[in-house]
Length: 148
Image (cartoon, rainbow, N blue to C red; front, side, top):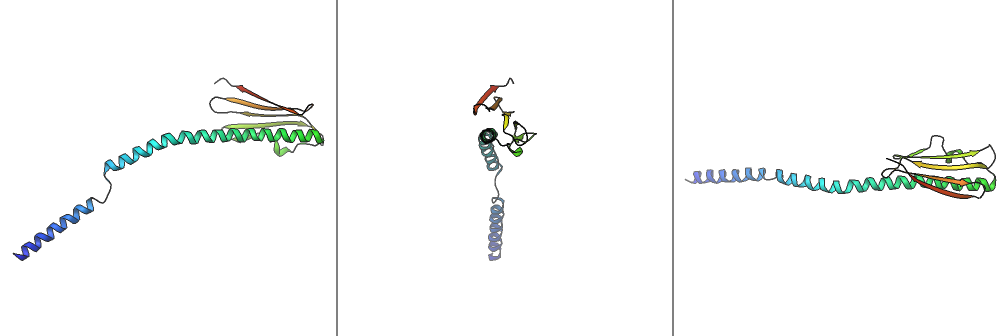
């Protein structure tokens, strides 16, 4: 009888161990709830990150244009050339934006015209231009909306 009791106790213990090993993982419902929560959080956060990157690209491109205008002002006042690396021929890309600076000057002389434009902005599409009046040294800014 004692051997029957010990066999019964051993069987009960084995059953409990088997049940515990099955219960160590996550259930399908727990995994689905986790996926839904992560999906909801990402759908809220990702557009904000993209918008922030677009704003940073716009600021960087406009800062490049203002820096070129400052260099042109110095070039006009001191009668010097503006460095070529400040206005690359093919422009400069900032994400989806293209910034292009144009300086008209003869070798060793002050610039006779300076302009800068930023194109390709995301919604709403806006082109921004900086133009330096070399006679007065004043910079004008033009912002014009583009038809989509």
